[in-house]
Image (tube, rainbow, N blue to C red; front, side):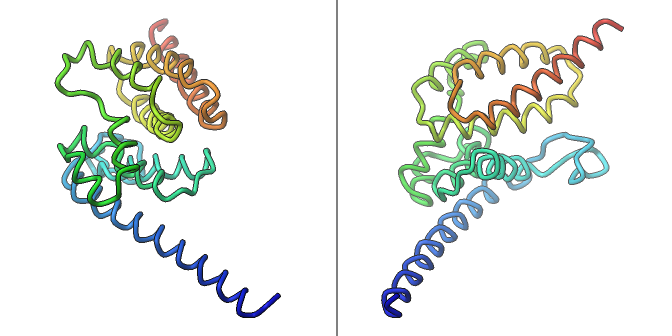
Length: 204
């Protein structure tokens, strides 16, 4: 191989890697700022404090890792969107803030994953299903990863909404069938385990 050609190729590879790292770095900074002070209650999580609280940022980290590991996606824009998937809905960040930091594609994926807070709670789930049907494949994959982590959290919340969440997840799997089989399988196994625990609890 021509040494100059080899050098140019490696230089281009490093350039791509640097751009990816820069984008993910910006996404991380924005996620840290938006979720600062926010927590989720997951008592069994090794990252939890004495009151069972986990920094909210752990959730988008895990979602991004599921996207990378189970869906096999290394696209930095998709991983950035996974890190930021909750910033509009949960922290009040604006679409244009996400776009300015990470670009239009990332912002659009995040928007596709954001529930409309203007709607009554009873209508948000139906609107979510309608939005999922027309969302990009990238957004659908992140939604599966998000649901996987949420299911593992939900299993520790013994309240009357578990059956609704189980039913909602099963419906979601039908809508997202074929999008990413490894993630779908992980979600399916987790939701059926949760359903079994719920049924066992009701029978005792």
